[in-house]
Image 1 (tube, rainbow, N blue to C red):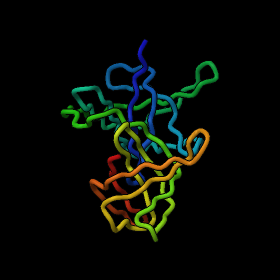
Image 2: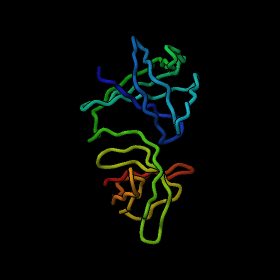
Image 3: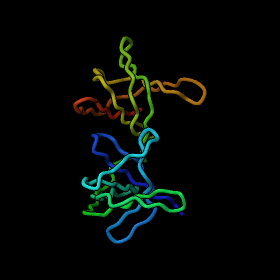
Image 4: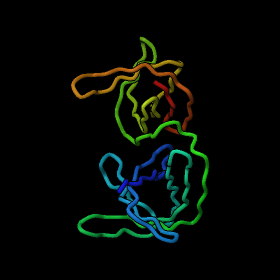
Length: 171
């Protein structure tokens, strides 16, 4: 059986967690427990959470509320009550993997910055920085299996929150 995954949008801007959908029923979705930095994320029953499921053509949005945690065969699962659903056309060109990979950004020959890759596809990524990037082209250095790799990228978009700068980059 093909596993189905969804993205859980967390209250912190630009933070998501990938969950495996393990079941469901009328107005209920059961998922694995979300993690960030290999630690379980605690959810609040008073907060609404967005779950998104992607296929090649559509993007399914579920506005949900965390109901309970279930234990079965030494595994923990979450139950979400579906409050609202909607469907959009999937504009993503490729599947993205939610990640949390530290990288070094070279914004020009004199400027280096530590950053994090938050999601990754074959042709691009979303990165989080603590300082703004003031150029269009960057070099991303990351740890490969044996050595440091680097890839040239172009910044396609940017946004900011109080503490961070976010960029969509294309390799």
